[in-house]
Length: 308
Length: 254
Image: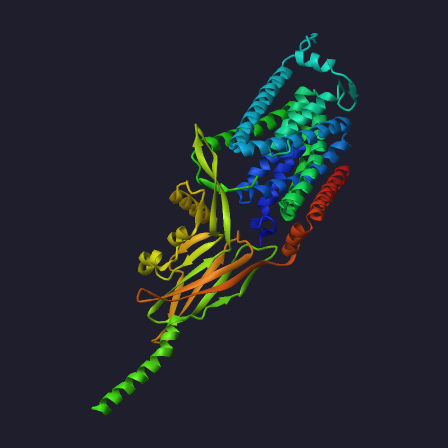
């Protein structure tokens, strides 16, 4: 009664479980502007979906979740399309380069270890930094605000200030060279390709801390960029690898689009720093789980080979 | 004297003539499989088949349900420094996707299984593990452990039940549950009849598991018209996303 058969995964699953997973990931997507691939793919693998099908079908459902989230944020005026397009171009170029890097790494052997360690380090650094910084901001906000002091510009700020083609990004309220989002988008694209995820959880901190964009614009813009990345990935995976399970994606996306809308509404009730602390906590939990998985004796020494 | 011998030969001929058909009958089994094939539809959650027939009273039957053979590829985890990680890749050639052994009375037949040519020990002999430098025993044990956890490999005791029909024959019946993770393909149901610890007959019956209805249509589209399938997936996802966004937007406005 509650089972449904997935034609590409060739696996029968419980409908409420898949709907619930979709809702959870959609909620995160709406709240933080992350695609949720870094959470969803491992969860789907845990319930028996082959890794390649899990990753590809997840991309398909993120298309719906991010489309729904982008639309909701667009209505709130939270999408910086200009910044999003620069990040997207950089992301596509970086992603193409990243795919080549992963090919070379696999030929050299032991690429899996590098991928997992990259995951743990990236999640650890990003999660810890966000958590500590947001906590400090919240504490400072509670104290009486001191008179504003003219601060000395950092080396990074001086460097990006010297770059050519300084352009105004109205929606974000910043002036920046397009070189910065292109290069940072490219960097995230490379990491995303190596780690096999959309890269939202890296992109969001980069927008906040390196592009200095306001948190609510960051969420909408990140979703806009993720939408196009995942459209590309879904079509490529269906065409090249036949790994997109439409039935799985459809169930996930029904759950995730509802979750995304709930997430967007919830995000408006929370402060930027509170949002960052929640995201940092989730990132750190995933990091600790991965680290524990690497250190403890596994229950099974064999796992299904997902293919290169 | 000649008459006596002729009579004896005559009686012997009659007895042998009467016994031969019975002996032939004892070596064969008529296996009935119900339903004759299994369909995987939208709400498939596994499925039962009933295997039944009759056999000589003093014999036993062993049934193997064998899935499509495949070259199964796995990552092998190993320890590197403090970390457990995928260290090798291994391929098990001719490994059935599913292997379930149904037994009538394991105490009676258990010790004989390897010599009969059924069971995990027999599989271990026919499966080729590559690369060959890996520890064969460990890899096979881990393979069976993984498959058992998915209910795809099992040796099930006392699952064949006998009912006496008369002094010479008895009927048997066993129910096998195909798990939810069953894949479509050509399966085999192999029966082995044992009489006085000897194999009297071995036969193999094909059994098809196939996708039906919407599941079959989606599978065919994904495999035969990949690009159209991929674009359709995106269009439907965008449509559902937009509809949900519109729906939530409207409800918010009210």
